[in-house]
Length: 452
Image 1 (cartoon, rainbow, N blue to C red):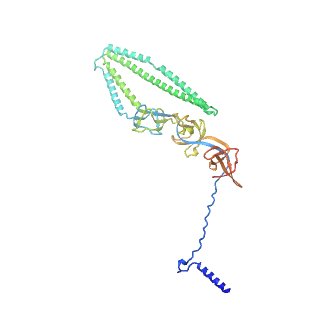
Image 2: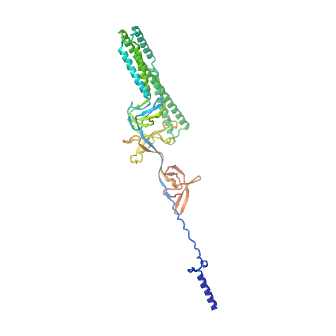
């Protein structure tokens, strides 16, 4: 028994030696590999979700936009003929006086013709005044010419268009009164929340009709005024003809020059007048004292008649002129008070008031105008405007990121000492940084909300 124990002990010792690392120089096939051990995989630490506090305060929807500080009273200038621009004498922000030449067409040919016509006129006048060089007409012919000139003057006076001018002026004033009344009715209709949509549409249609009526009346008045100016010009010419015929008669009685020379002077003068008028229509002049706001032409440009190419405005008063999307502009109302400041200059913030908004997308002027007061601010500076559209005072609110939606459900996750729970909420006014929580609500001021 003792011997068997010794043999067993020897076998265990040999087996332990075989499981150890092989000695140097031994055959690798006889070495035994150690048993593999598992490596634990680290668990990612849990990420803390952001939390938000339910607060009470004001929620305000604000419309923000930018505009330029420009004159309130602006005039758009157009050529009345097609042509090619020769020169432009002004740039943006230049100061101009009424009557200054701002731009003109390539009219070198007309200018050369005018110079020749003026020389011809001077030559005709000199020939008329020199006398004795041509056959003297009879006194009788000169008397007949004078009588005809006086008859022409009398006939011209009979055709006075003054009554048309007076009637057109009265019609224009009545059209303006009609437009003012239609504007008041429309403003009143849109200012009352209980006004029926049909009543607003009717008021708008009447306003558009009144605008069209005013434009038509203005055109009629302008046409009548032009007829009156042409009539005055015709009267002056007829009076000159009488004077000239009288002079011719005197010269004929004294043995003076040929009466036909007077007609040569008149023809030369008419040619000069016609060329001067063509040059005037091919030139663009400032109609008021002010500043140049826009210049949309350069030398060599082909321009169509009645296309706005230069805009000038009176130096004062100025206001914010902005291009706001029609949908956003109509969220505001005339008289709405907001805050305006120079771009990136909060220290310049002042109170400002909406003075004008476009009534519809068909209106020619689509600008929004805001009245403000800035001291010594240069024209065309960029102004930022913030206009409050809606405000909810003393309400519960959360930042939009704290509120979750799933299908048709709007809810939040509330953190409590016992864990988290879900609570449905109803939203009121929603803005970029605050959402109103309508009350009564399942959450209250001070609750901690777990973000998604």
